[in-house]
Image (tube, rainbow, N blue to C red):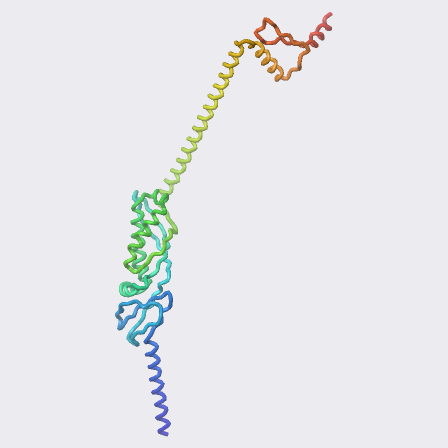
Length: 285
């Protein structure tokens, strides 16, 4: 009876020892997966040297490993500033970033978690970087030179976040708005410019039409001058007679039966219709 009782205690004790050994063994190493980085804390104090992907040995029971996601993160943040000409400018940025795996120990010591890093560092630094970029140009330049505004913002934000182990990969301007007063002023300016351009177009069109009239008048005067010189020259009377006949034909009249050219006339042919003369003679008693 006693032997059975002793054996049962030995079995229980052996089970306890085995469980302790398994617990110690399992807490003596940690696996860091791809896209992660870890920080070992021994008795609450972070140890130097980040744990990159792979298997790592750590002191059992008295240590803890904080694992950070070092893949690309996306964060949207609003920002507000004033331009160089003191116009209110609001924007919303989408920021793609990731943590520097080799610097996660500093993140653990200064911010603790990724959430704290975003709310306490990235959001305020985004606001300050936008103020720097917006203050360098006027409100109109912020519209016409939007790419330059973004470049200045990216540069300022990257410099400010570098010391916090944050690598900025890309930023996007989701929205960019101005005050209602400025938006109305821009619209009024565009309307005025369109009207001015229209006025210039009409003025040019009138100028071109006036020039065309001048050209036509000059051409007509030149033609008349040449005609006058032709009439004064030898054979000019024949030219005048030809012109009169063509003008008469274009008027739609029928060809007369008789055509007499007056010798004493200034060159205009005298025309009469023989049929009409005969008809008038038959009616005479």
